[in-house]
Structures are given as structure tokens and as C-alpha cells.
Length: 154
Image (cartoon, rainbow, N blue to C red):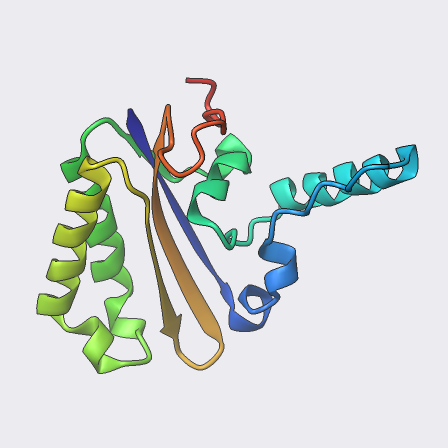
């Protein structure tokens, strides 16, 4: 098992468009060739989108370029998360969210969860219009969706 780290910082308005962040449903039988083509088009759009997926494990469907870092050790993945949180904390809309003790607890919890094969996803408002999404996703296999292949082919 290894862990991929993902981050996205963008307009809250884009993040709130949940339909663009959902994996499309496969057409139900009897599916026509047009149904299948439409599905493949939606799937390709989903995969190419930089928006965070609704389900954390679906980050693995995104291109390898979406991966910010890869780790073999949960503590290293959690340290990356801690650095990201520390870097962005001054911009958090809520001072409670930026509290150093709280962020330390989030990092500790993330390390424990990833060590047990779970995924971690956090989101924070930055200012009034921006949103930060951070995720750690276990890979090879992912426990939530073990049929997903590693985006780096490993």
C-alpha cells in the first residue's frame, strides 16, 4: 500500500457544483451505443476535471498529474497534510479551524486512519469565495473501492 496526496484550491462556486464532482452513472440496460458514448464522454470529463470528487477514493480516477505527492509511510503522508494545513491556516475563514491544537489533532487522526487503510479528506473556506480541499488516498489497493487502479500504474 502507498498513499497519494491531493490538493485543490479554487472558487467555492466551482466546488459547490456537485454534479461536476460526481462519477457518472453507467447507462442501464438496454443501453444504446449513444448511451454508452454519452457515458464515456461524461466519464472523460469527470476524469480530466481538477475538481475534487465527491467520493475521496475517486481521486484515483484522475490523471497522475493531480497527485501532489506519494508516500509509503502514513506518518509521512500526515506530515505533508500538516504542512499544507499550516501553510493555509492563516487564510481560514474561521479562527477555530485555524487553531494549532485542532490542526494537530486532525493530522494525528489522519495518520491513524491512513495507517489502517482509510482515506482522509478535509475542506476549508479561505476568505469568502475560495475553498481548499486536501486528501490522502490509499492506493494498491484502496479499501473503499479496491477495483480502482493506481493512477501511477503501481
